[in-house]
Amino acid sequence: MTEIDESTPPYLRIVAELRRRVASGELGPGDRVPSTRQIVREWGVAMATASRALTVLRQENLVQAVPGVGMVVSGSPTAPPARSGRAEARRGPAHGVTRDEVVRTAIGIADSEGLAGLSMRRIATELDVPTMSLYRQVRGKEHLLLLMADAAFAAHRLPDTFPPGWRAQLELLCRLQWSIYCRHPWLAQVVSLTRPLMAPNAVAHTECALRALAGCGLDPHTQLHLVTALANHVRGTAVNLQQGAEAEQDTGLTDDEWMVAQADALGRLLAAGEFPHLTRLSRSAIDLNADSLFEFGLQRLLDGVAALVRR
Image 1 (cartoon, rainbow, N blue to C red):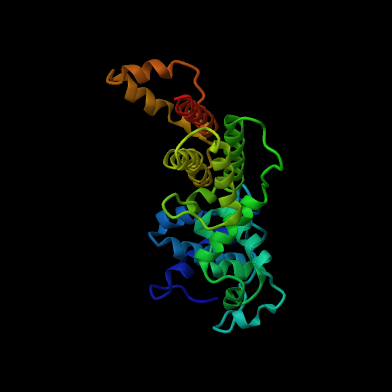
Image 2: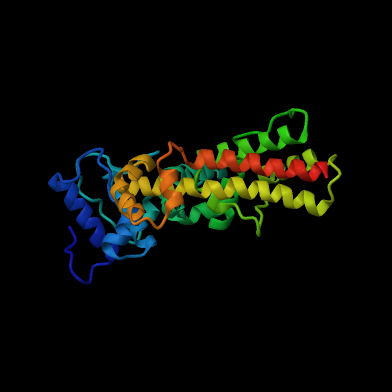
């Protein structure tokens, strides 16, 4: 085993410490290991360094990613494999890896760990191929994200027929987009309104929304802004999904459990009497979450569209 001292690269120090925790039983099979964000805070390193450390542990089969949970200890510690500058050359052949396999693997990583855990090296590790071989299928990470987004939208196909009426059609589209973001929380970080994705399956949603408004007598400027505002509402609300998932992985608490844990702090904040309206609302049984925000905002936006159409 490599001796650890001040000259050891930071990621290897992290690997050594996490390996020690597993060997000592401090972390047992199935226990969650620190996430990339926790490693960043604990060791004061960059996100890339934290991700690299977890990648090494995955290569040693010491940890594994579990969808919806994060990185967990996969079993008893094993002796780390011999490593050298030619390690990648010993991986499996690349000729059998297809673009679809690369994209599916990337989506799987992003679904379970977020975009912070996604890298070309990590994908290559999962597929057991040299990292450079991936560039035969994708031009780089930006191209990969485009393919991932297009695949995510393609997996939730638009219906062959739409209900009558512009409102029902727009509502259907927004709900479909919301379901896609819920399945792939990282997607909200990829989609941009100022630099739209040139992904055919995503662009199809814009086309359908414009078609729904085509016969409403609205000018092109208004149509495009309405369609963009609706898409922005869905995507903007969905940004909270990934943040919530990462926070749950870091703290081990769901949103509801976290709110319960903050009850004393909230009580002290409100006891001063400086926030009477918030104090009044806190006594009511109001369920505020991402789903309720999406639903409330969607209906109010559609009410606004209706007002414009009537006018």
